[in-house]
Structures are given as C-alpha cells and as structure tokens.
Image 1 (cartoon, rainbow, N blue to C red):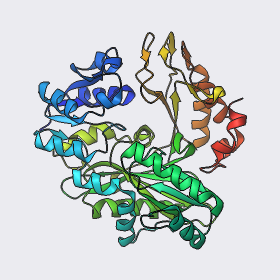
Image 2 (image 1 turned 45 degrees about the vertical axis):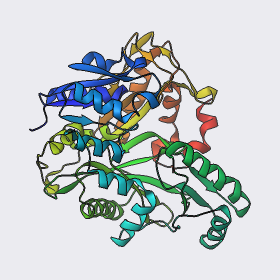
Image 3 (image 1 turned 135 degrees about the vertical axis):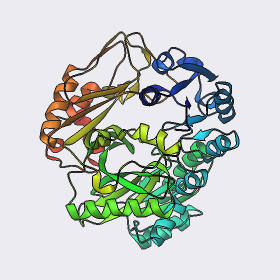
Image 4 (image 1 turned 90 degrees about the vertical axis):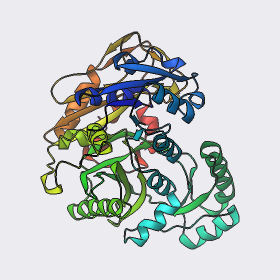
Length: 451
C-alpha cells in the first residue's frame, strides 16, 4: 500500500475510529487537535499529534491551510477528513493533491458536483433515477409561491449547497412561503456562503433510506446494502438500522441498483452514500443527495456485512481495488445504532459540556461503542455534541431491539447530561418496536419521549 502515514483532520469519535483502522493496517496515524482537544482520546492513541489552531472550529478544524501545514510538518502522505468539518470540501481535496498528500475520499470534482444538490438532481435524473417533483434554482419567494401552487403543498425549500439540516424549511401553504423562503436563504448563506435555494415536493409519510457504496480506480462499484435513517430530529439522524426492514424487496433492489448506477456514472472512488426518500403511501422512491464521505452511521453496515469501511477507504485511496465482487457480499442479521449526545433532552436538548466524572459503557456480545469518552474526558462546548455511538447486532430486528434496550440500561455516564434516558424511551416505544414510523414521527412524539 502506498499510504504509510495518515493525518486525521478531525476530532471526537471518528478520529478515534480512524486511528484504530490505521493501526490495524500497520500504518502510522497522526491526530489533528485544537487547543480545546489537546487531551482528546485520539491524541492519546495516535502515533503523533499536531495542533491545528484555536478552540473554535473556524480557526482549527475548518482552517484548510492549517490542516495542510500540519499534515506536511508531520510527514504524512495521506489525509483522512472523517465526516463533518472539511470532509466534503473540494478545496481541501485539491490542496491535498497540490501538496502530494493522498486525500482519502473521492476526487475533488466529484465532491464538488455531488455537493451541489441542484446539479446532483439534474444529473441523476438524466441517468434515469427518479427525483422528487421540484424546481431548479428559485430566485425569490414570489417565484417559489408560483412553483408551490403548481407542484402542490406541502413543499420543502432546500439549500443547494451544504447539509446537516440547515437551510431547509417545510411549507404547508402559500401564506408560509415568504417567511420560510427568506429564513432558509439566510441560514444557507450563513452556513455555506451560498444562499441558493430550490423546491422539492415534501413526502409526508416518507422513509429515509440510504445505500452504502464503494468505488475504486478500476471503475468497480459495489453496494453494501441500505440503512434506514428515518428517525430524525430537525433533519439530524438520531437512530439508524441495517438493513432497511420497512421496504419491499423490489424497492430495495431498485434503490441499490440506482445507487450503483449513480456512482458508476460519476466515476466514484472511495466510500460514499446515496440517499433516497421512499413514499410509504405509493411505494415510490426518489433520490435526495449523495454524501461523498464516511457516514456517522457506517457501523451498522459494518456489523451486517463484516466489511471495515474505514480500512476500505484507506486501501482504495492507496490504489488497491475492491477485494470482492457484489455477489460475494453477505448480509447477516440486523444492526441498530443510536447516537448518544451531551445534551439534556428534557430541557429542549440543551448542550451539556463538561468533564465526564463516570464512564461505564455498555458491553457484551454484539455490542459496540464508538466514542472518545472516558472518565475524566472533557466534552468541549465548541463542537457537535455527539460523544458516542452505541451499536448492536443480533440475528433479527426483534433481538437487536432487545439487545439495544439492555445496552442502554447498562450505559452509565455522570458529570454531564446525555441523551441516554431519551434513547431508552425511544427504543421501547411500540411504534419503534413495530417499525411503524416515518421521518416525521420523532418530531411529533418528542413531548412523550422527553418527559
């Protein structure tokens, strides 16, 4: 493998995850850290560490030149961006190429093309993949109202750039268009530096289904099945599972084929995820977007396939082909992941930074915890509040739910508030157990779940 020394341009649990993958491949791992993260677990575990700036992400994890300089100073020949921060920045990918550093992700032009949702919608539509009824870029709210009257409400106004739920508003009638449009545009401009918006028909009873793919430099593309990510709060995923149990086999096969078709048409290399919305009323599915990076929820796919996705990323970036064919991929059992954050769910999910005074994670057969937490660890106030992902694997969905219920009961954290009590209630709800939910369900039931 041409890659020998990997710079990890991220923090938290994904940085720890990448350190472990590097060490299992016999590679050196160098951790980036901000001033707030100098005691982070990834820094302790890595073969070296480089400070990339101040506590705020704008001066550290989002500072491209700081990242490149640190990687070069550490003598790294590759860089893994993780997820979030600069993971889908074509500028970082290009700067890596200019600095003779292997970017562990797809090519910059692919990141750029699929990062713009408008361009991605237009492209996949030409390739025969269905997209939800919608529009091209909308210039003002008056035009948005005209289009909404034509498409029919409810509609979504969405930012053309970026992600993470920002710049998205649901509009249920023409009287809401002006305020929602202006708010979404302002959010998009502040978050992504681009206020461009488009419209899309809102699916009231939808399931968010995404397909994990791998592509290599030889043109090979395989899928590793789908994940159901429908349990969301403010368009942020809370729990995920694999495989998607609420879709028919025919829809499952079509979605998987569509993900591979899209990836092949753009010449995709490395790990990526193609996201779809399935209308449970009609059974139709629509392309949403493609994420050109590793996903937070990648462990559920690893648990049901046995494929280490982060190691696969590193190997593909180093020039290795995918070492298996599509027909060799086996799906075994069911996996569920919940995201544990440092928040107080009963108090409107108020962030709870601080020192972890007690840390007793769940364990046992088929239980995995991806985290940067330990007793005495600092949870800084500057970044995303995710501190751990709890993943379980069992022969069936029923058994996986039972295992998750037990694991959440075993998990103890003190010194900071976490969403563990909220998640315990979530995985015990009858609708969740029966799989009777959609992308709106969690928001509609928050009062019950956070009491």
